[in-house]
Length: 312
Image 1 (tube, helix red, strand yellow):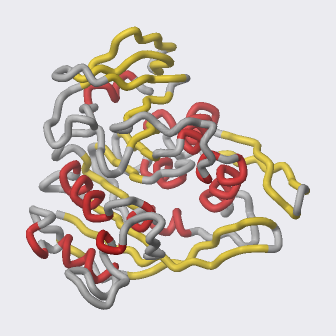
Image 2 (tube, helix red, strand yellow; image 1 turned 90 degrees about the vertical axis):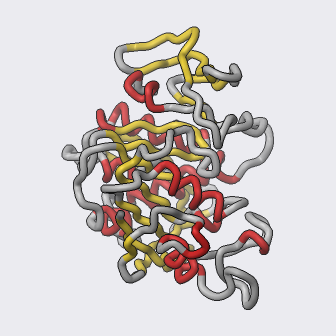
């Protein structure tokens, strides 16, 4: 973790109170803190830094022995292809992350990419802000993103068919400012950053994957600046009771406070509906982009994500 990020962190376990974290037992190599303990200044909550990765979830991560889809090599490989496939010249890859990045205006300040996975959009934001921070609850994803941050390239195995794989190498474009990027393990429902902090906030294909979608939006709203802030939100709205109870969904139901389509409900929330997200955002007309998910060389899924651009 970059030493310069330390002064921006708060304890995610103490929210909604915002207590700063201090570093103890830290070992750094240049700007990068390799190991240490981040300690809450008020209640002594402790969060480790291991191999440069700050673990800032409210509760410790699940036991690595527990099967977690997002921690597997197959998931890492699939997400690397999904986010960087256009850089590899892959025929079926989409340019969705570059297209979304083109919607963001350059702006001084911090950018926060929630659900960053293996980091593509965070790197895109490095050319549009002073520091771009990507967060994810997957340690495997964050480790790969930080590998790219340090080295600018990665070689991985891409599944072809059955037990057959081919070796692929991603090299990041030279104009991406890797020194202006950081990745940490954190929870989009309990962000370790103070209110009024981020000038750019992105939530891409995440809201239907968290147990409380409204809490995610409230945390986004808390961390984003009250003025001079940009928001990019996108999701395919693949609502699932395995991810969140139906009562927590922000769309996809025929009755209830969020009946109807998720994109319309979230646009209304951003505009001040029920006073959940204040001050209200200026919301552009929603639109959509298509992107591709790859399982192996003979199996692809075409997915549509609706997106909203907003500012205040």
